[in-house]
Image 1 (cartoon, one colour):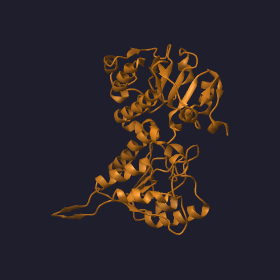
Image 2 (cartoon, one colour):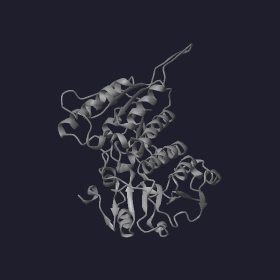
Image 3 (cartoon, one colour):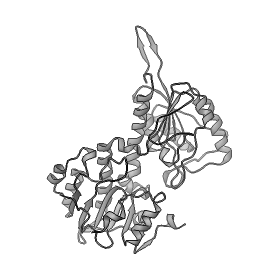
Image 4 (cartoon, one colour):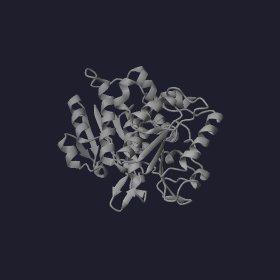
Length: 371
């Protein structure tokens, strides 16, 4: 069993899909590991570190590979030397990169999309979306604090008192919860909202103030797969009115709302931006999926009505060392959980295998792509 770790080639991608720690663990399972030279440089991992962990560092890591690991899906042109039916295990962006998925099928490869991992208890340690969103929520607040022209905490000095910044987090998933916790640690007054009423307790547990529509029913529990789903027009209107009155008083706003396979929902309009104080900051974590904020642009600082709007196409890549460590552990946890000692390779079960498998036997087989 040969596992290949390729150098990421997507623009702005600084992460790597394995670390010396996970290389050692794969070796302990009996696998050979080949790492493409330079794969870890942008994550501060030298080739020598991979070699010391037992990996073969080579310019042709994919040659003879049974499994290819990636952060993002590799170009099919780079996979010519892999074994027939080789697994591609990575974040494959199935909806946005359908042409690439079709190419994997045509090449006879078995593509496994880690972002389709079901959100069930036994798969928590394999969930790349959660591990990377956790870091993204943290980074969003840090970047917003850096762009904000004032201090976050209340400060009492001989020269007078500085009021605490007011931070509003929209969307209380993994990223939103970490954003709340980080803003609180920095000393801000934090409030948060979500369409899922069940998140009120989570917001309160972190010491933040929940801001919720009380006149129209939201989602009582989780949406499909743990995500929120689109709400009724009545709820959207009521939420917009509530947000408009609240957002005008905020210094920092973090938006985190995503719907899998769909464009990000619009949460903040130009009119709402205009109601905010000059010097306020909005960080749009959904900018790569179309954005929660009107006028936000990936990797660009946009100033509208005196308000700074920030958003990165790949926020976890701004923390490459930690993001790589967590991503690599997700991949190891996944493969090791299904490792069959007798077969000398992982053997997937139906529940998780059917959920994440995009291609098999020369065809696209995932129901989410066939519907």
